[in-house]
Length: 170
Image (cartoon, rainbow, N blue to C red):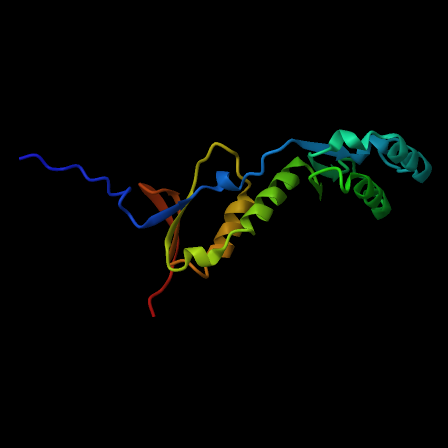
């Protein structure tokens, strides 16, 4: 007597969310204001304004740009404002921080577009391993966003999950 093989994972009511789907494609670049400091310490307004005037801002067209200073220096806020004024309307997005901060912001922006009502009382698995390195903040944010709506939330693969949250029955 042969038994039919049933794929219980495929017939499960689980919904798998892959955070790779929230990745924003496009080139990422970084502007480090350290390169404009005198002795990696002092930003001179006259020199910085000359840099802003002469720099090829069009090279950032359609790119995601992270702006920061990697040196331990106090950068006046107007310097960031000058850079933003040049990048605005040219780049896809400008973020204060390094490339990791930029990646995190892009993921969080895309997760915020998710409609949590679509997952009301559903059993959700947040896929653990993808092709794209996902910032931990993305896992935190999707959990925060979905928890009030879902009946359960798990991490991993449908065949092997780690329980994260289960709604109590009232």
